[in-house]
Picture 1 (cartoon, rainbow, N blue to C red):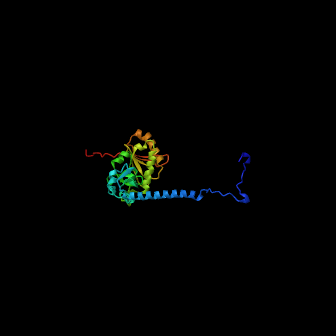
Picture 2 (cartoon, one colour):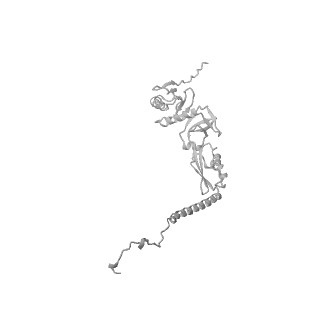
Picture 3 (cartoon, rainbow, N blue to C red):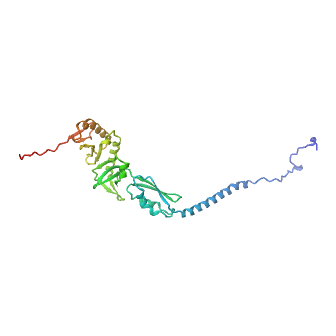
Length: 287
């Protein structure tokens, strides 16, 4: 057929019949099924991994203990109470039971127990914070921030070398774990005083012992001075300690340490003193 004889057909047969194509189009349903099969395979694999992991965990035993956060509590104190759990099945280990075994340690405030897949059990220690010292029945004790009395340890002196000594505590109670605790008002007064003391210029270097007393008569003693400096129980310790520093600098440093029996710092803008009375020496009248 020559170029001049080329004809364009519309695709329709005479009498209006359409040309039928033998080429089939891909099914849309088949394309949607593929992601479903992939998801199904992933779920099957995950289920298998979970099953294997569960079986493996049942076979893991406690290999060792890792302790974090202990600085006052010695590891041997902890290990002596928890080493009995070594070799037990890791999955069956009761973390709360283990925690109860160590919570009897006086310097332990709280503990977080966690299991690791390698068979280690991690024990994160939260220790009590020593804030002061005291003497109870002739024994040196440590007071923590919550008012609990703890046995004194040399490591406490190393970590907290400037703890103030507290005396005059009479309202002690015994709590459920057998430990003794200060009255809530006494520990609040102590913490308030220590906070104000930490903000002073040099009073914290001079003051060595705080005596709790009723009737608004709490007082303290400074180094090299027998004088009782009365600060009371009604707070405002920052102002009172500032007056103490001024009095020490302008009066005590010039007149000496043995001049006053008491120095009362409780009154605003005023300081009252009572002189130290020297004991009279009896005269010999036999001659």
